[in-house]
Image (cartoon, rainbow, N blue to C red; front, side, top):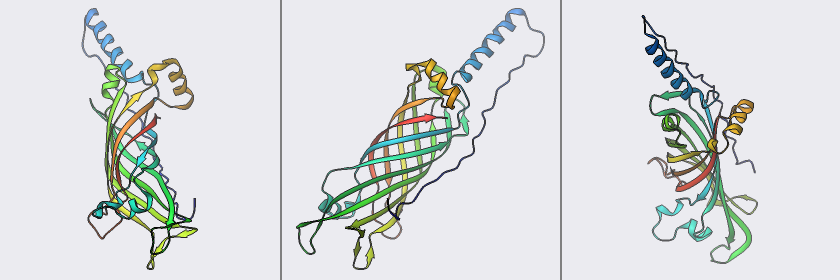
Length: 263
C-alpha cells in the first residue's frame, strides 16, 4: 500500500447489560410461589443462555463491486472503456458498538465500516485505443458510519438461529487512480479524491452456535465471543456527492457475504 492508503481506527467503550430482579410482595400460597419461581427461572434462562454480556460485533465481508463511475455518461463511460464490464473484488471490515436493547426487537448502536477494492488494466497510448505495457488502476476505499439495528429477539425467545438487521448512515469513498508508477494526472488534475454519500444495508445472519453448543460455550468463556454468524447482505453505497459539487460516483449496489462475531 502507498501513501494514499489511509487507516481507519475506531475506539468504542463497552456498555454493561442490566440485570432484571423480580421480587414477590405479600403473602402467597405455596403453589403461586412455585409459579413465580418457574416464571423467574424461565426469564433468567433466556437472558443467560447466550453467555457473557455482548456489546460489540465484528464483521469480515466479501463480495463483487462494480463502481457507478459511468452512470453520469450516456453509453460506455471511461470506467468501462478502461476496465471493461467485469466486477472488482471487494473486502471489508466493520465494528459495531451495540449498547442499547430495544425490548422485543433487538440491539441498536453505531457501526463503523471500511472496505477496499481495486482494478487494473493496460493503459492506452495517448490519442489511441492501443494498450501499452504500463498499467493503470483505480482503487476505492468505501467507508461508512451508520446506525445498526440487529433484531435478535426472535432468536433469544424462540431459538430460531436467524437474526435480521439493517444499517443506515453516512458513506464516504476515498479513491485514487494510478498510471504507471505515479498518480494519474489529466490536464493538471490529479486522479484522487473523496466522494460523499449515503450507506444503506439490509441482511440476515445465521447463528452457528447450534452446531456445537459445548464448543460455543467454551469459546465464550475463554474469549468472550458469544456467537459466530454467517451472513448475507444487500449493500447500497450511494457515493455520488450528496448533490454537491461534482464528485466521481464510486459507490455501488451489491450483495456481500461474510463472517460476524458477537463479543
